[in-house]
Image (cartoon, rainbow, N blue to C red; front, side, top):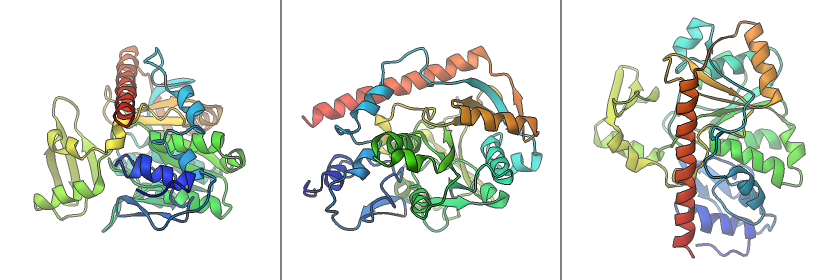
Length: 353
């Protein structure tokens, strides 16, 4: 444990990192010079003596007086709209077949980012790379090839260090692709920091990804080594039920794992998450269980609605109907995650009283 003389860093370490709750969202990395990200872990370099609590205010796993209003506004018992606010929900995929072949599922995320870059709507997109010898991490994509290089699911925490670095250099018109925890960190930035509104104006587009959990990268690397697998992973996927299979793709084929082998590697902090569909994003995107090869698109804001409209008009995307049954299923899954997260948070709070 570290002294809480620094209200921000000390509390963040004691309440989140030391408890093993960090989900590697990257909100603190690059914001504070004493947090860094290395090979799947957020590491503390030195003790910070600042009392402004910025790192604590941005952390989606920290409960603190300054963040309570946002937490209470977001967290409610399961409701009729567990997937969060929406203007529209439908199925979509990239019209470009080559792009779909290089992407996961329908390639809608890649298509939207490429469209936004090529039409000057954003100057760069903060994404997560595939990782090389180390864990996946944040990177700035500026063109089609770089966007495609980051396509596909990771299923592991990957601190978006690049975003804070870009913001510090004064870069604007940024697109950000992230998990629900990362979208929440951006919402906290906008609402909790004195300069949050000005900083947020530099982010032109937020694309959130559906997420039920992420695994600990180092633990997963150890599992691969115990199975004698040392090839670089090209992508990951969970096969539709009842397969119960976690698939790791590589250059020569794939290796399958039972989900029972993967679940012990799920990050502890993921159990506290109450947001499956990235409610704080402009556009939320996930797989479409009812139609393989397509994406589920949830349009949440006017920003999201406008780029979707343009991408459809210019034939970057094609769309299809999202069924009532599919909506009921998605909403039930989101409500289930919310209730589990609320219970896990209450249980954690009781255990530390």
